[in-house]
Length: 383
Ligand code: SF4
Ligand code: SF4
Image (cartoon, rainbow, N blue to C red; front, side, top):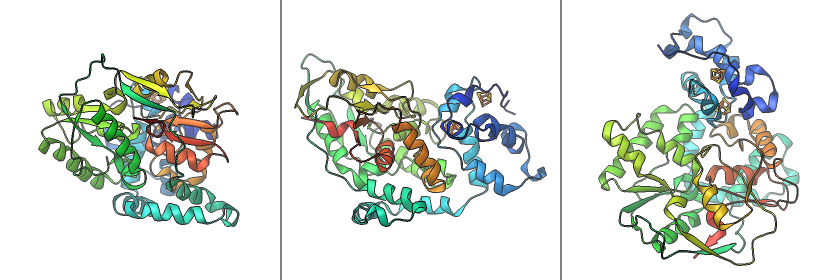
């Protein structure tokens, strides 16, 4: 049996949900106190508990899956996983709908974004405004001119001989294909040999968060099998959340040496573009900021890459954007408050924010005030 939470409270300072309420029952520590005695992995037995399951289920839905609590915890306890287990055992209709939305409705996202952008904001009832804004963010508001043209310094050493499969994830595949094309063009220019990524599905991370474990495993098996069939090439990823989720395959659907090969194959696109030199176009604004995706955390290669090509780039002081897989659907108000807090962590003169996670781009654009834009860094560079 695993040893559980010591109630040390280290996770309180990093949890963005606790940050919104400042009430301990909403913190990872509080939720563990309630839920570990129900979890078999901690020797618990929920059938023996007399609880109001509606309250348990409501608490289990208050999590953005940001993984900050696990990183802060000396025991490396993942409260996100514990809560996903509760959601899996006590499902809500939104989880089923979320699975449909991700796994089946992706081709409809562009039309939905277009329709939502045609509806004036003023006519939307207040409770539906976060969902309306989220739908509007699906539409691509044609990016401005890139801030710089990049090329590989001929002296830079890269391991371009190995083939690469580009993992785009569902946001890019459905509503921002331009990110995949840009990444493809850049990697090609760096000399990488790109294989057809057509056999990849969604990374499955958001299915985990929704407690839809069967769907998650199916996606994980499809992706790992496609990688195997393709000869185990390197996998280039430009979304922090996809990377985080793909990383978790080791130990779940991949074991032993193969798990090690998988982890070694996963590579952020920014790492593959080593030795980038930039020629600025004049489109870069005087003030700009960087939103660090929770799922890069301390291992953020994007910011190192971006600070070289866009000197002066600084992180905002906010925490999680509140995208959190199903949180956007299960508690749109909380999800919006988290996004607004994150945007509030930038000085007022910053109107252009760069990030490296597809979900953060969508979520923060939905909550941004007029005139503020959040872009994937792939939008800001060209060849
Ligand atoms: S994963 Fe993030 S939101 Fe969820 S409990 Fe942990 S710190 Fe809080
Ligand atoms: S940091 Fe870990 S051990 Fe400490 S209260 Fe949070 S979950 Fe419990």
